[in-house]
Image (cartoon, rainbow, N blue to C red):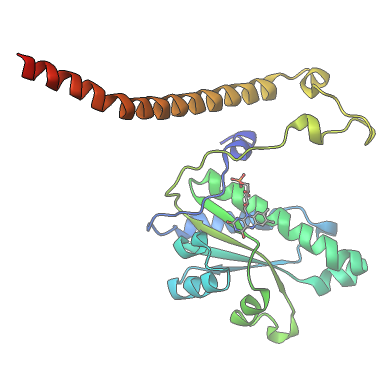
Length: 238
Ligand SMILES: Cc1cc2nc3c(=O)[nH]c(=O)nc-3n(C[C@H](O)[C@H](O)[C@H](O)COP(=O)(O)O)c2cc1C
């Protein structure tokens, strides 16, 4: 799958089938994590792969019982070694680069999962202390911090793409104060704009069909007794 296609079609998946994920695929996903960029090539991430159901259920309890974790066939806990980043880059390394490095690895893994036909969900809401002690993260004084959890499995849902903020409202040209109302004209690339417009047409026609069906149902409910009455009174006249 082409990278841009992979980025465009990836969705957060929160429902998974019972099919286990092959270790070959998990290894490719983890490798994608290790191939991420990191500040000074520090690679101060650690990945805990969890495939045992009782452990996944325990993680689920520490993630506010999120359904994505409940249904997951595998879970990857992405951890940062903050001390390593602090030694190299001080507080900026500890507070910023550590998080950024892990986020890069996590996104790489989400995209790799999608390209392999799997679904994934980035979990940010979890009880850090509980995950920390569950996996004994202070082991050997090599302190690691859980940054995000990735729930994985074969998708059992096909969510619609959530709304994205318009490119025109997030792109600035050369200065923060300068924005273009129609960035596709500046870029001389209409493909993104066309796709956006096609999506908008599809969405609004779907809405229209839904509205029409709802209206027709309501109308039918209203006139159905009258039609029935009409036929029945005609029958009795005969
Ligand atoms: C930092 C971060 C934290 C997130 N935490 C959660 C989470 O705890 N639970 C969840 O279901 N999704 C979580 N998500 C997934 C987002 O809800 C999802 O990416 C967003 O709704 C956009 O949908 P998409 O990924 O399909 O484009 C998180 C995503 C990020 C980047």
